Length: 361
Ligand SMILES: Cc1ncc(COP(=O)(O)O)c(C=O)c1O
View (cartoon, rainbow, N blue to C red):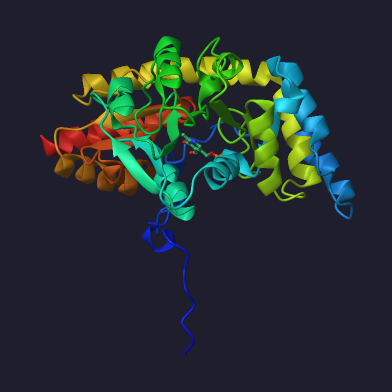
């Protein structure tokens, strides 16, 4: 049989594990495993979805002008510096594909988002994992790990799955301290959960080696639609557009995302509900002896006494119809990541953890 060679790095990829959605034999489920918006999409986005179906026979535009214009208007950004993708994952892929390859290194951090090493391997580069300090990105450790082969540093801020964040000054220190020719990717998937935060846009404007990525999958409640975007120096965005397929986004994706980004009231309401319920859930779990770091996102990283306890709690929650995320693969075997649900979802998971603790005692 002919041997078909696989490109370097591809066979190193460990397949991405997505949050589970079902439990066999259990019908009343609350899914808190994928950091989705528990309220779904906003009314404006749903209305746009209904309308967009009329034009399915038409090819979409290739330049995403209306969507980029809307994003630019709402966030006060130059639309020419914006690129849209099939989720922010695709934008991250454009970046790794364009700026790194065999022989290069891509830095991510100890508990960093699992797509980063996948993207590094996919372009033939070497992923380099750098230690964090107590589940927080450590800028000095990253700067120390840089070599002349380092081409990209991926940082999510707030981070997934820890929920922690570093300040703007630290991000700027990182951007400025990177070696010549090294790009900092400020992944802002959870930006909208942080009141008044620009997600790294200001850093893009003040440095020439930073790209920010954002998503419609979280606060906008459009994870199933698959739309994300990036903002960076015009010359770099022009590079990314060369590897982007012309019709990567459908009319429906663009029209719904445009309605969603303009619906700033829905975003503000979701942010405030999330903050209130996140604080309630963190406190309820802490009272049960399950602490967590202060989260800046729409999930909590609940820390158990041991890996065994985390696994036993996960199994108990599943029997109760509550699906959360095990994060042993992120180097956090004693933790469970719990998405902040709506009020009923939060009460249900807190009650289930309480029952778990009681039956153990
Ligand atoms: C930190 C981070 N970046 C990027 C993504 C990718 O999001 P999407 O491709 O849905 O935009 C996620 C999704 O969970 C994430 O947590």
